[in-house]
Image 1: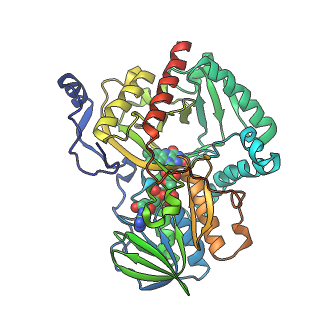
Image 2 (image 1 turned 90 degrees about the horizontal axis):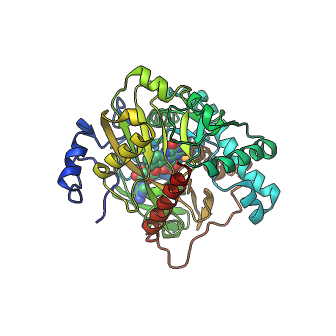
Image 3 (image 1 turned 90 degrees about the vertical axis):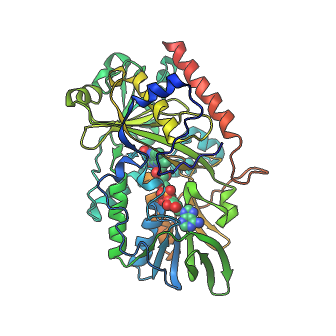
Length: 461
Ligand SMILES: Cc1cc2nc3c(=O)[nH]c(=O)nc-3n(C[C@H](O)[C@H](O)[C@H](O)COP(=O)(O)OP(=O)(O)OC[C@H]3O[C@@H](n4cnc5c(N)ncnc54)[C@H](O)[C@@H]3O)c2cc1C
């Protein structure tokens, strides 16, 4: 069975549950619970007056995808005087950029050690530094554009799911401080309640420079800045073909053909056959989140005494945080081997959340949604140009700052500016033989990792 991760109706996939399970599940849903992202509450559907307009027939720069990558690239090119058009297959911002957890880290998944083996120490350090650059840069962007999106350097508590992983985490944190100058505090299990009100974890590490924001407000602010800069944003305008011509490109869309001097593909987890070269390099993976109903303030204070964002060391990670107004918990993760419907992922996430915080049983879910992130085979983001078409994607689930920063760099590349250079530029973008963009290997992999995570936790219980 295939599910659309972005469904907006409440017609659920109930067939796979027993009658008892259905009754239990019914009791956890708030009346009129929503499949839309919690972050969209109070945000106008499309802030763009041009959202439904016809696109122009020619433009200097055409950008496919209106998330953080596309809009940050657009701001660069438009402000340099290039006519810039951003098109999106659905509503502007429909992709991950209004659905994510709003957690911002230094975002590079492979360790310095692993990267050094492949690229040498200096290059590895340069790649890892780009993660720090992206984090600092997004703060500057938010301030410069005066975007009211609750950006704060709240810090992260990265929690160990077993005693053994705590030891490894603590060792790694010391190395990060020494070699990469990344500040961290090791929190043993007996001090854990100062960071997080649970005994579920085995201690963890605080990265006090990590940050959080409201992703949809950030996206909304970018849209407004882009429009002020003269960018045309056209929603409900899927690109179906990109063809090279003698003067640039002819781009076919559902709203007609558009000629463009430069084209940027900024479609990340939603990359389709418009570029089969990119599709063969991206592994689309669903990620799922729930939002609780407003909770008593003393409970929030007990569970999140420092207001940090939280992630854990499981391979199939949980990520969670208080809402910016500290009334709710937003709890995310991957709860099934296969992609699933949000009426199914909701109760599973709820169950996992209540295992960490038993006090939450009885409180209801108001939102349950999902989106598709983009992994790459080497777990690194990629930016560059293929057959004349610019791209940046493959943020591996940590793209709030990276997609923004690399989007901006991509805009600079289109302008031919030397500042557009990044440490990712000369990395090859790997694929695998026979891979066409459908990750058949994912369900068994996720099932195995979930089993291993659980076994490690049990051994420490
Ligand atoms: C549930 C979830 C939680 C996450 N949590 C975090 C987090 O806490 N921290 C973090 O750093 N990252 C997180 N991420 C990842 C982060 O949201 C993404 O990396 C980031 O938003 C990517 O931005 P983007 O602009 O590249 O892509 P997107 O925002 O996904 O935009 C791509 C756009 O391309 C459009 N498109 C696709 N094909 C076409 C076409 N043919 N024609 C026109 N338009 C097209 C789509 O409609 C879409 O709007 C999360 C993602 C999800 C789904």
